[in-house]
Length: 397
Image (tube, rainbow, N blue to C red):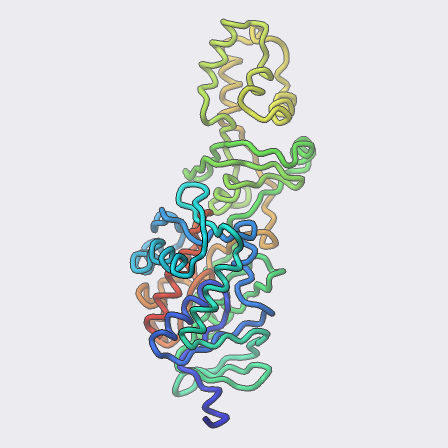
């Protein structure tokens, strides 16, 4: 093999994350000469830290309805052709032990390393090369495809796949490289923002809730006609937990959140009955029955609900029920990309083929995974998009 041909590939994939590695193995099994390059020091960094180090690798109930996009129908084709069951079959073929935590959410029993090792094994078996610590300095078009300038010299390929992810968690090496590449080749990118991210609070409320850091309670949170019934966690910076992360993808600065603190209770009825049966009882007594004690006491103080229930008129009880059912808060903001699990927005899918992930105007240029304007709910959906979009491109490159 000549020196020049050793740097020639059928397919180069930039990004050794979930989507990139999946694409590489898929293309390699089709007999393509594949190279994956990444500027990071090791592959699958985001996989390794996900799910508390155990990787929520898919969701058995994943459907197109679990994804946000400016072009919501785009994800249907890829998700239909590579399902959660397909990925689960792969996991089981590799003997990886897993468990279902919440409904449909599958995690590794031991470590997220099992998923990374599985993907690297698949790439090895498929003959796909993975090269780390390889930053791309520039990309240019050639008659036959693309030339990439990297530190070690030039690389050429017929098909180029961008699997560089979004802007979330910059300490893991996230950059805007994918968006810049799309724009370099004439593709539109939609505005990006942090998704699945904790909220920060206005100073006064933050101070009031600070002593409750670490307390979690099940809530139903609403914003823009979207609602999620999951746990909320108070942190020393604000509000987190699955409920807050989920709703953050639908929240915009200035919006208020409506939080039902007792979604399983009929508060008004309960309080009227309690007033009748035990008139000396208090709202604090009631809250302690249904919420963590410290949270119940602090929230009761925050609202200034004092005295026995017999001193509360019917319309007072109605107001209490309204506050507990729709605690309205206006977050100061979010923690941003620093802790966001995903990036909303990205490469405009109207310019991509939903079947192959290739640019309609440049059929040998592909965009997969998080860099594309498709963002899943919390709970394994974003990994399922990575697998499905990676396979869709891998079958075509």
